[in-house]
Image 1 (spheres, rainbow, N blue to C red):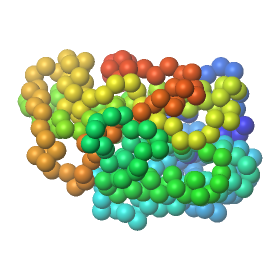
Image 2: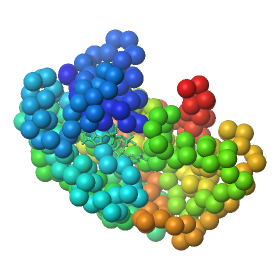
Image 3: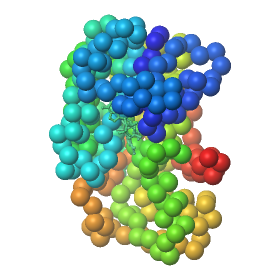
Image 4: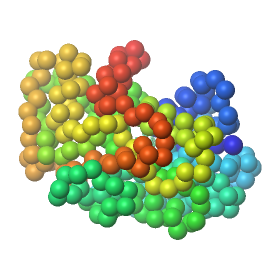
Length: 297
Ligand SMILES: NC(=O)c1ccc[n+]([C@@H]2O[C@H](COP(=O)([O-])OP(=O)(O)OC[C@H]3O[C@@H](n4cnc5c(N)ncnc54)[C@H](OP(=O)(O)O)[C@@H]3O)[C@@H](O)[C@H]2O)c1
């Protein structure tokens, strides 16, 4: 297959592109794109429908991995138009392009399409969606656009993504716990951190391994385990040896934020594990590898 990667300079896009460029015996041809041209990355703005349809046709694309998105959860609250354009309207461009040629769209969505649940049990794929903010709402619209288009699709919802690249919670907390004497971090929101390299490997394996062909649908993928943002921060600080910073748990309503985040958005991965025989690492194991990798950059 000719596989188009969009948003190839983002956290996830970089990890998938790296696998495509470094693994031996790769079955497919991968073409990396992002909104701006970069080393080995072609320019493709997914909001430009004519350009998307043209690019897909000219390059004989039969699969798209969509890693492009509007991902700033706080900023989205005051930027609905752009968030909706990128997370929903542009996704329809990709979906229609795949519907036209019978291709497969692999799309990444989020735990924030859910608003959490009162029973604090991991959330299944078919649970009712009730996003608490604009980011989650526009990502939900993106999923709906894909389903309406009728294209073949795999929608992977993930959570709390971090990597050695870009701006993310792990990198922010490495810096803050190194420089601040104390820090308050919310303890009443639970989820699962997911290392972008693990998700990238899962997507890459699903596409490269012939035995997984045909398993379309919605899946949940995160690392294993559950924690709060407070636990995540304490673990980061311990792994980095940042013992001088006093980290205190606080409640969400004590922390100024323009958006209400779900209090419990742990994803149930039962379906993913049943269909794909891909091992999912525990969150602290992946975190420690990622922290080690970030010190070598
Ligand atoms: N980050 C999380 O915690 C998280 C959690 C759950 C799910 N997800 C989902 O996982 C996926 C990957 O997230 P990520 O954290 O890897 O995202 P990211 O690091 O923000 O990367 C997104 C990439 O898309 C590019 N982009 C922006 N506008 C574009 C356009 N019009 N056309 C083409 N590319 C464009 C961005 O470029 P610029 O940087 O120049 O804007 C960036 O390189 C997303 O679908 C996201 O919703 C993320």
